[in-house]
Image 1 (cartoon, rainbow, N blue to C red):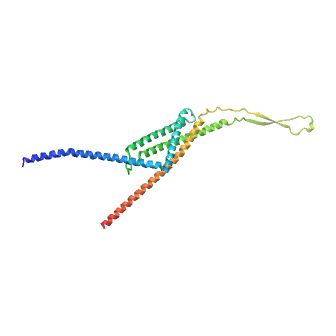
Image 2: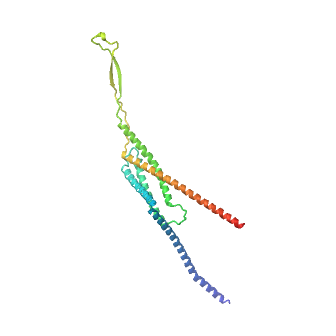
Image 3: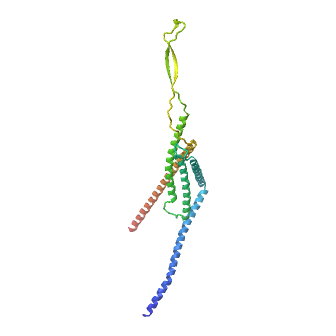
Length: 287
């Protein structure tokens, strides 16, 4: 019996060593299957979202919304390119407010950078995908909100400079159009007039009115600050248009946040009702 014990132990060890690679292979296969399933699930969710988006775009409402969005993007892209070109041409030539051309160029370049980053993030999210029920914050939302914050700050600073420079230019143009005024004074000099017939001589002497022209005193004026009227008119129109669009977008953000708050509140109320129902059922079962 003592001689057989080592043999059985050796056989068990060889069997365990033979089964170990099989177990490792099964574990590796299961992990690879799990990875494939997760990737496949993300791809399926992306395909489902893409299919739903295509169906929405083909619907009449989706076609209208798509046309409006594409039109706004094209108009904004054209406006930003025009701002870059106009600002670059007039950099250093607007002594009235040198920040106006800089504002035009920086605003246009900021929008182009945002557009490029937005496309890259969309492509990145397309490859990764999001599973259904994922409660993570989308990077697209964060990117849009970050750009909107910078855009509002730059827009307010640019609008103040553009409006003030435009008013100063109009004041200078009005001052140049006004005609110079000549100062004059009038004095009356009394004079006795001898007539041929003394019997009709008036009791009071006749008055002779003389006009004396006073010299015009000129003061040394400051050098006029110059800026292109076309530049300020274009910047003013762009500022007004972007302020209107920014206001509409801000209203849209507030409406989206309000809708999100309603959804979260409704989900919380549903969870509370489910918890109360489970507690009531458990109490009935105990009773």
